[in-house]
View 1 (cartoon, rainbow, N blue to C red):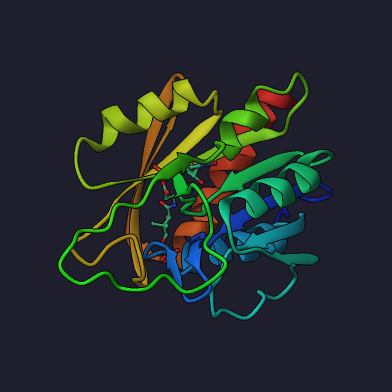
View 2: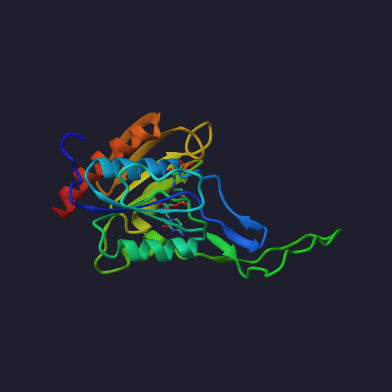
Length: 222
Ligand code: PMT
């Protein structure tokens, strides 16, 4: 970035999956590798922001220039860490794939197999991090991601509105895009507009995304 478009801004980025423990050896997780969120954190730092990266369980090195990294495991831990870090932030970018549900209870001991019968897990709903931030009277500029396998635009616009976001970056997942891969393709939506960021590697997409976020942030927050 020649002009350091986020100079002096505090930006919080979440990345990676969450793991919801079932017992000491098993969990419910998802395919997020953290690559997209880590690329966004690095691009924000290169744009001059002071970046806090809240990371789920991933195997990635902290990107150059990131001021603070907080490692978490579950959605509840991510919620607590993001809420604290975002209290005085200018922008929150939620690139993490947060588990929507967790087991009702975590078993203290390894569950034993009961041969010949099905096993039913009771799940409880996790809090929505973005929606809980947007419900606060004063909150950062909020950017969500939407990972969809179909109806990308209608699901993304629904999340933009329902979660009270300023922007949402929608990616179609599957077919070598989105989760775990080196490349992604994004359509960005905001209340009165949209932009295509065609297929590219995640570092290059993250740079374009940060440019767009900075432009919108200035338009909305001055
Ligand atoms: O990590 P990679 O392998 O590089 O893959 C990148 C990615 C595909 C995971 C990423 O680009 C992406 O799309 N992340 C969001 C995936 C997702 O879980 O989307 P969602 O539709 O479930 O959630 C929508 C938004 O709400 C997201 O910003 C999510 O962080 C947020 N959310 C969801 C649930 C919850 N309890 N709290 C939230 O804040």
